[in-house]
Every structure is written in C-alpha cells, then in structure tokens.
Image (cartoon, rainbow, N blue to C red; front, side):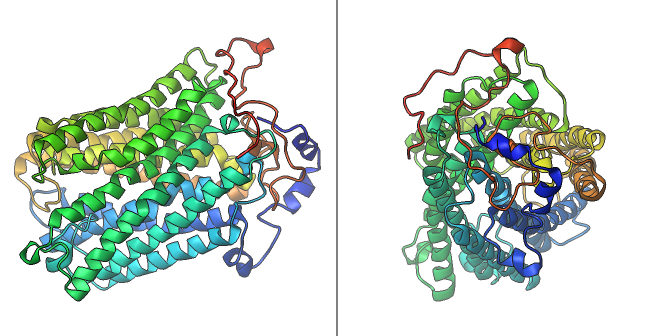
Length: 562
C-alpha cells in the first residue's frame, strides 16, 4: 500500500531524515514527559511495561522455585497466595492488556493510515499518566503487604477475608481500566476520522482492523469491570451488602460481572497479536494475505462473540445445566473465526517464497502455540470435561498458551519487525533467530507438562503438592529457565543494536504498508508529504514476478469516508 506523493520524501538525504526524526526533534526530559507525539508516548508505555514485565516475571520465577519440591520450602502458603496474586495482577492488567495496543498500536496506527497523530494527542498522554498512577497504587499495595485474593478478586475472599490492601489493588485496576477506555476511544476516533485519502475501510491493514476491534472491546467491556471492583470496594469499606449472602447479597453476581469483562479481555490481549502476525506472514511469504475480507469479518466476529461466552468460566458454580449448555455451544462457535485466521495464514504460506527471518520465526511460533492453546480451549468448552479439569493446572497451561505463547510471542515478533522503523537500526539477525527458536521450545517445555498435571488432577494455587507430581514440576521449572533466557536475550541485543546495529533503510523488509513509506525513524509529523492510497493492502507479488492469490474482490466501500 503506497501513496503517489510519499515517494518524494524517500529521495531526501538520509542525514536530513535522521536530524529531524521524532527521537531528535525535541530534547530534554520535559519533551518526553509532556509530549503529545504518539510515537514518544508509545515508547513511554514500552518503558513502563518493561518494568512491570520484570516485576511479574520475577514473581513467576519465585513461583517455579517454590514448586520445585513438593514441600512448601521457600514461602508460606499465605505468602504463595500473595505471590501468584502479584504475578496475575501485574502480568494481566499492567502488561498483557496494554502490551500491543499501547506500544506497537500507539506507534503504528497513525503511520498505517497516513495520519499525523492520533485523534486526541493530549488524551493519549493523559492515558499514560493514568496508567502510571494505577501502577503506583498497585506497587503501594504490594509494598504494604500484598494481596492474597488471586488476580480475579473473587468474593468473599476480596470482601471479608483477604488482606486490607485489596482496596488499593482494586482501585489500581479501576484506574488502569479508565486508561484503557481513553486509549480505546482515541483509537476508534483515529480510524474513523484520520484515514488518508483513498484509505477505504477494506484497504485498512489487518493490524489496524485488529486494533479497531480491540478498542471496541475496551470501550464496551471495561466499565463493567470498573463497576464490579467499585462494588467490592463499597462492600469492604462501607459494609454494603452487595455480595454477602448473609445480608441478601449474591457472591456469584461478582463472578458474572468479572467474567463479562474478563473473557472479552482475552481478546483485548490476543486480537492485536492476530494483527501483528497478519502483517508479518504475507511480508515474509511474499504473498497477499489469503482471504482478506474473511480475516476482517473474523476479527469483528471474535470481538462480538467474546461478550457471549463468559459463563463457561462458571460451569461448576451451580448455574443451571441449560445455561451451561448455551455457554458451551457459544464457546465452540467462537472457535470458528479463530480457526479462519489460522486457516488463512496457512494458505498465505502455501507456495510462498518464505524467508525465515526472525519476525517470521516468531510468527510461525505464534501460529503453532496459539493453535494448541485454541484446541485445548475446546476441551474446556465441553461441560463434562470442564468439570474434571476446572481449577487444575490444565487451565493454567491453556491460559498461558493463549496469552503468553500467543500475545507475548507476537509482541516480540512485532518488535523485531518494526524495530528498524522505530529506531532506524537493524537487530542482529543471528541472535534474533536463536531467541525466537529458544522462546518456542522454552515455552513448550514450561507449560506442556501442566496439561498432563491437570488431567492427573493437580489443582492450581497450592504451594505444596503430592510427590508424584514433582517430575512434572521439575520439567516445567527447567523450561522456565529457557523461557526466561529467551525473554531476556532480545532485550540485550536490541539495546546493543541502538549503538552498534546496522542502519536500516526506510523499508528493509520490502514491505508494503504506509509506515514503510516514510523515514526510519519517522519525522515528528510522520510524513513530509501527505500520502494518497491508490492500492489495496498486501500487494506483494506483482503479476510479472509470478503467481499470487486471486485478485481481491472489489468492495463497495473503497473510498476514504467514515
């Protein structure tokens, strides 16, 4: 996808492009803390998320050390509860949910649609400050003794029995929810209002569609979570009988409210990952994405159906068999659009001129891990099997295959793919390929044994366990060492590349998006000449170079209207 006038900017001298990039256009700490440039705000998010990733990762390491032996050696049972609560709270709400939308999404969305910035630049910066304020509240809760409810805040643990720092932690999650809503509104408005001339809806890159679907879920679902947690705060602080059955309340009400948000939140984490993979696969297969229109509708169907399946988390809660069967059916249905995406990625690869660069290795790893995670999710959608494996390590493994094997692997793949655009430097290819392979095998060795433990009946959230499960925990802990190395290694060589890395051209991957039609790194206003879009997305294989998929069928909306 290119603009007829954007090519003029590519002819300018590299020294001029480097001199006024977004990184050097302004100097000083205040220019970063008060910036309204979406690219700098994305880097602010990246710095904060890296810090939270280390905190959540350190908690995961301590959990694996504790589980290395059957006895509770490292921490007490209460300390273990606080440890896995810390891990869940930090990794879900302060890393996984904002990971791709607030970093790569923030940086790339205006570039991909030919805009100068997001629709509301000041709101973008304000959402980062909300995020940081929420992070400080959570850190205060942790430093004051931690929280032992689990990351789900289930009642009555969170309202009557848990540590008093529940109030701080719940308010932190509410505040980060406001940040998510602000980000979602900003991205929706940007896609509707700021597309370049010629950028019709069905010329949008799939990453933009994924962010659009994610933003819809953010805006519609997050207020429900905020309401649920504020009700927990009200009952705990003021004694209101909302969830207490002794006073006429209903503890299951909280579960309905929480999962009505939290299952759509799964797609807040995974939909942007779909978009990242949909950009990488056609680039390194040199093929137009197979079934573009189906991919778009699959994104929207996932965003919609995600609101209808929360009840499959409550099969053992006492809800009626009829309700369980309905939620089970819908849980199977939502697998269809996800399967469409895997099918279309596979057909994009078919007969492609595949180049196994590091971003492609991450994308292929994502497809494999997500596929296994999705298939194990179908097992959980079955009511009788779900009753057997609920609250076992099977659920832990399934969740991590989707969230970590999926979202985090895609984040690393996207980071390597757009690193030349973000920094103007190329990552070291050999180290990057090694890290991608190490991440795939390290993750598999860590979490696949948990499927076995779950089927054998090992419950989650216990610091001690019967000795017959030790061999599986040792395997998982050994894999966690490899996985930690795979996560840390890219941080080292990417930092090295900032100083010693080879300078990147404007389009080092020979990609087709508008973001590759400006300088690397981009100027403050993204494009020196406003681009005009004249082609559909992903035109990787011109006719004179060889075969490609059939021409994309023209769609009625090929204009630039909203």
